[in-house]
Image 1 (cartoon, rainbow, N blue to C red):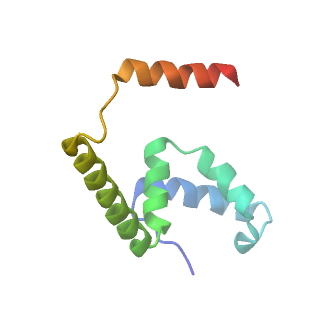
Image 2: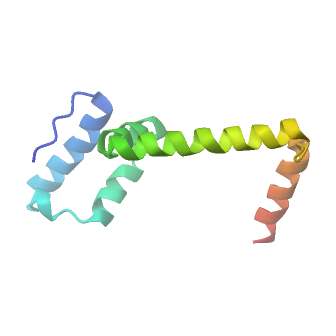
Amino acid sequence: MKLVASNPMVSGLTLALDVYARQGHAPHMATVHQVIELAAQLSEDERRVVVDAIAPKESVEELARAWGEEIARRAARVRAGDSKGRPAEEVFDRIEAKLQAK
């Protein structure tokens, strides 16, 4: 199956795979590690485009549904008084302390 990249961001990855193939490697022989190495060279926006292009639509829809349910659950807890927020600075300080402890 050949990937047709109409998006210029995906075209960059396609070009990199083409170069890899021209270096004597069969395109179908590219390992997951090699694809990850190539993807790591992409910008954040380019990586999003690649993920969107290869993620099964059902998975994306399921993830969106699950997050929608989680957001509704959390909002209901806050409205019922079962959960309260914390100041962002407090949360960031706690995370920073954990990262520095590593």
